[in-house]
Image (tube, rainbow, N blue to C red; front, side, top):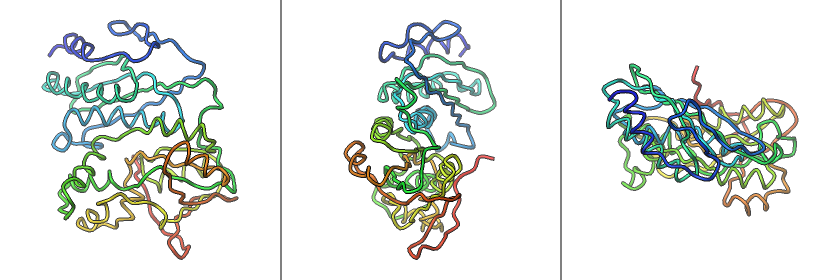
Length: 319
């Protein structure tokens, strides 16, 4: 399909949410009515690194690309807004595959009150999708950052970990005796991450002091909080919730279940710190949370077993 024809057919598949989007599709740039504070992030997924076409449908790829980008807005506690998409793909995939990818992205955009406001299409040797997202807030103070954790804070987590990593092991051929519904849940968690936008906004409003989404795994992402805040953070591994089915899948693949839960990444749960006295307010605002650690004076991240001894685990690193 020719470039102009493909772009036009993509534009017809996209909706508009809210009243911010003024003009853009068919123009050189999008025109968006702004609020006081814009919150912008960019994320890229690449074939052979984040997905394979034999394990992910085109719709899965579109969902994954937008979901991982929107998760950055969730980690800041921002309201969703607009997305801008750079799609690179082989010429042979410029028809039905491209349409299915965009439709998967648009389905998530509709669920997340996001408008895909513009983008670009180029030819490439393999599929790559870059998504820039812009969220909004009325004041900088409404947002959560990575540098606010203080000694005496406690460490919270929004949900169980390891599901995406276990899903990846299943896609890689692991044969585990888990119920079909559990298996499908693990596969979906890997293929179609769910950005916790409403939860992120609720946590920011309830007084968390620092927050990050778990894209590269707790072992890597928690270290970002310690570095940015200039504090020491300890996590009690026995308190970390592990998703159903992760243990069975990890053992079937000859892997340590804790390694998968803490290090595999792409769970996109939110990790945060908060004053110890804010437990009830945070639970009331965000629902069920797990308290897994504490913040102290010092530097660095400590992952501790039941005896309080350090355990060495690492998360995903791109380079």
